[in-house]
Structure formats: C-alpha cells, structure tokens
Image (cartoon, rainbow, N blue to C red; front, side, top):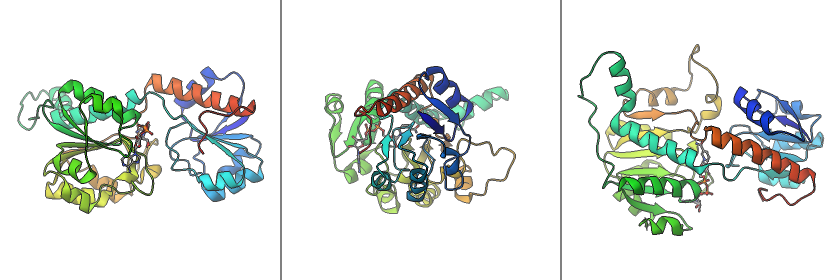
Length: 327
Ligand code: NAD
C-alpha cells in the first residue's frame, strides 16, 4: 500500500522503516489537517498519531483521493470522526495495546518524582546544595490510590502499586478480575475521590469522561490530593485544576497530557514565546510536573506500534478482517 505517514519524527521513521517489508511509506512531518491533507492525494492509506485532526472535512477530502484506510499508530481514536469514516466506507485501524507497561511505569514515575521531588534533588546536587529542606516526601506504602479506568494500563498501575503496599480503589463500569485479585475495591466515583490520597486516570476520553476532573469533582477530593493524568488531556478541566492548586485542595499534579497539547507537544518552542497562558501558569507551580506525551515512548512500545501498524495495513490489503479495526 502507498501510505502517507503524518506527524512523523526521526524516531517514527526509524522504527517504521526498520519493520516495513511490503508498503511504500511517504513520511511527512506535517500534522494532518485540511491544509495538509492533499499530501495524501496519491496514497491508499494514511497513518496518523494522537494529535492529527481526522475530522469529517478531512475525511471527505481523503475519500475524494480514494484513500481507503486510516491507520492510527496509537490506542486512542478520539481524534477520528468515526461516523464520517464509516459513511465513506473507510476502514479505521489502531494499535489497541502496545506495552501498557510503558505508560503504567511512567505514571508511577510521575507519582514518585512529585512525592520525593527527584527533579529538584537532581538540580540541587548538581549545584552542590546538599540540604534536605523542602524535599520531604511520604511513604507510598499504606497510602490509598484511586484508579479511574482499570483496563490494560490501569491494571499494570495497580500491580506496581500493589507491590508498594498501597490500598487500591477502582472505578470502572467493567471491573477487572486481575485488579480484584490484587485486593482492589471497586467503589462509586465520588467515594473513590473522597477516599484517595492519589487519583490516577486511565480511562479513554469520550463525552462521558470529558472534564471528569472539574470544580465539583475536585471539591469531593481529599485536601492535598495528588492527581495524575497520563490518559488524555480532555479528562481534566485545566482552569478548575489551577484553582484547586491555588487553594491547596490539589497538593500535586502530574500530567503527561494536556487538553490543548496539539499546539505544543512534540515540537521545539524553546526559542519562542509560548502563547498558551493556561499552560504557562501550570508550569509556575512547584508541585506540578508535566511531561510532553512521552509515557508511551519506550523502544519496546515503539517496536510494537510499528509492527502492529504495518500488520494492520497488510491485513486490510489482503482483504482480511483486521483484528484491530475500530468499529
Ligand atoms: P483500555 O481500553 O484497556 O482500558 C480503559 C478502561 O477504561 C476500560 O476498562 C473501560 O471500561 C474504562 N472506562 C471507560 N469509560 C470509563 C469511565 N467513564 N469511567 C471509568 N472507566 C471507564 O485502555 P488502556 O490501554 O488501558 O488505555 C487507557 C487510556 O490511556 C487510553 O484511552 C489512552 O487515552 C491513554 N494512553 C495514553 C498514552 C500516553 O502515552 N500518555 C499511551 C497509550 C494510551
């Protein structure tokens, strides 16, 4: 298949090229949008990532070029208008699981860094400052962690935290037996929020979960709660979260995703002025740690993403029923 691969960085090219045998891959740095869609005009398929906007208008253009496949090289598909794709008979495939360990381990990394202030300690020692004041943390052992969404990633987080000796609360419409066997107690969301020292989010972004962290839900949380979001930025109402940080209701915030990340993440703005005042405000808090959607980024995950994406394209080309189709 001829495939237009959007939003590519050197590492995407490296991994996709390494595992490709059958397809003609055309790599574009540009993000997919109405302005860039014509780059796919000679192709049978497009391959996109988390911040490519596969809107109805973009899909109409793709259909006019006879593009037949949208291959996501990620798990989430909230950036694809599935109805429009279906209306044009376009197949959508994704990588449903590619090392949930990568995201889970980064999630716990954020918890530990915020708690033990490893980012500050690193700089202090390099400056020859060996004082401990300001670095006080807490034992993870015995703390209550609420996991919202206990699918593949939530389960891995639960397993790691169980090893730490944390008490686990879960909220998910579909309880996970493996989590229950770890001792996780499934409770209603309001009970999870009011009883957890740490709340971590691992559910998909959809109309039900959009801004599930908002003024009302923050009010239900323990004072000084640590919030972690490595799922999708839209789960969190950032303005309400900033208010929570200012009042001290939220004690720590660790995020790998941000609701307006599409205009920032994966690019280098170190030499320019960042115009997003909300994001800039977040960066001023000493108890906030932000990473730029890197939770998935391990060599193991990149290998699985590339292999699965190429296999998805091969399955469709061979007329097979692709296991990873998004219906
Ligand atoms: P998964 O489908 O295995 O699990 C998601 C779980 O969320 C399911 O158990 C589902 O029942 C539950 N859920 C759905 N709606 C819910 C709701 N309203 N409240 C509570 N639970 C709900 O998915 P996964 O592989 O564990 O991935 C979880 C999310 O992580 C993805 O949707 C994606 O947005 C995000 N993700 C982020 C990165 C990153 O690099 N930061 C990488 C991969 C995935």
